[in-house]
Length: 59
Image (cartoon, rainbow, N blue to C red; front, top):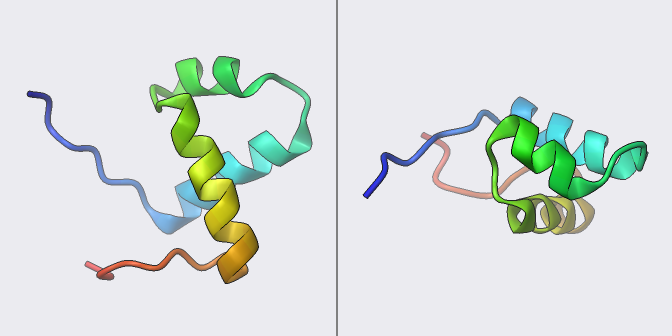
């Protein structure tokens, strides 16, 4: 199994901004950043629900 990557909240916000800009397909951005495409949509939903703050344990 691979090691789990941790992303900062700022990086998450930037990925959502890239997705919302709509200039490139989500699959292309995901390949470039090495992130599964479905995670973009999950983050986009979290931003819409929580207003930009990502819930979690806050490590």
